[in-house]
Length: 313
Length: 250
Ligand SMILES: Cc1cc2nc3c(=O)[nH]c(=O)nc-3n(C[C@H](O)[C@H](O)[C@H](O)COP(=O)(O)OP(=O)(O)OC[C@H]3O[C@@H](n4cnc5c(N)ncnc54)[C@H](O)[C@@H]3O)c2cc1C
Ligand SMILES: Nc1ncnc2c1ncn2[C@@H]1O[C@H](COP(=O)(O)O)[C@@H](O)[C@H]1O
Image (tube, rainbow over the protein chains, first blue to last red):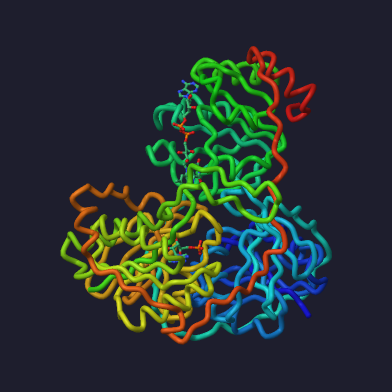
């Protein structure tokens, strides 16, 4: 039977995480359908229809779906679930919010944050902040998975496949949307950027983040990231947190500045291809995972690095 | 209004958990155990709602082994009124826990149930959402702010793109994120007082439930460790190596 993938989007644009979820779904079966649920999201459906390996797109639109609230979205997925062996979403905040609700309605144990699919019922996933990887076999008749986007290569673009409109599920509105505070940034998206420049408590202030770290990120065309300590201290907004409980990133180059390298932070970035650490404490644990470590005061090293790179281009 | 808070006993987050030398399982024998950090935040929030006169009673529940009573006592020392241990030696998967909590909610009739967003051992991030589904209640996950007003709770949630505010009709489920509050340390007098607070023990079978495992763990392994690289002496050397050796800079 087929696999249903929940599309990740903001009504205007399809998120790259969807192409990665499709890639995971194709490890389960080659009949993969994508559900685009939202409002005014026809362009998203079109983009999904062009994803390589997708055989059909289901488009559900309605006011109740405009903000991806868990209750109506879960009801919609459950209503369609009869046709599918597996339901897959990326481990985004929407996927993490709605999929366990779907799983419980179907009386299925969800498999969270899958990093590898060995066979259609054998899945690998990290536990204990990534210190251990478990392989689990699901005994449920249906699989509900969230996949770690950084662990799956996105599928490419292919010929357009059909888009079928499906009805939304009427239900009681137990929750209502009030507002979104969207962090706007000109910089690349943290989870898909090729280079990430991250700052920790060592940055000292929000101002330093902007005047010392941001120029380096911009010179490299990199995304900005942060440790929990930097977010807690109010240096940057929560959506920049990298780690066990923040975003998981795996860029080609990760530059950690003034970050000690706690287990929970490493959980979010240790699969980066190349890791650079700048820290004035030679004993900081971050050096144990860094390919290139520079023991230095970041307030000298970071501007110098920026200067060297800027003059080279 | 009564608040129910679910708390799990887990390995201390500062410990790097390893496998037993023979690979037969996790080596937890000597590991310090604590309350899941997100659950401390959930308990703190409930206690604050009580202190603000909004909640009338805070009941804490754990599904787990005997030793989980220590976790419940910690919650009582933080200010919860009453504890309930649903005893089991089995692995507690989120679906099974959600079923137990749903039965407990049926008896206790709370207006609000608070949970952590994620247990830092299984890193599942599921139980609150599953409980909401089982009860047919609305959910607000990853809460960084919460305000109760009459029969509604307004929650600010931490989401990928920033934050989202939603309003739920009570009864409802809220899961706590890191920045909801900073949990207090229990004072010694409160730890003493907590020893006298009521703590009831039950079995899953008392609710007509069996704690079953739907996921069979077929293998546990430690991921390949990253070898420490080299220390560079200067920014110039760093740039040179990133360009020529690592090939990540043009
Ligand atoms: C349940 C739980 C979940 C968590 N989730 C996450 C998570 O998702 N992500 C995360 O990051 N953390 C998380 N943490 C927190 C984590 O344990 C650490 O506390 C946090 O990562 C520390 O951040 P930091 O490295 O910026 O700060 P610190 O550990 O304080 O390190 C600051 C570093 O900066 C260096 N420094 C200071 N000044 C300078 C300077 N001028 N030049 C150079 N170096 C300097 C210091 O030497 C030090 O190594 C979590 C913790 C818990 C309990
Ligand atoms: N065995 C348990 N007993 C009580 N509460 C639990 C248990 N397991 C999970 N929870 C609650 O559910 C939250 C999320 O856990 P999880 O879904 O396992 O990541 C935790 O922070 C707890 O509040």
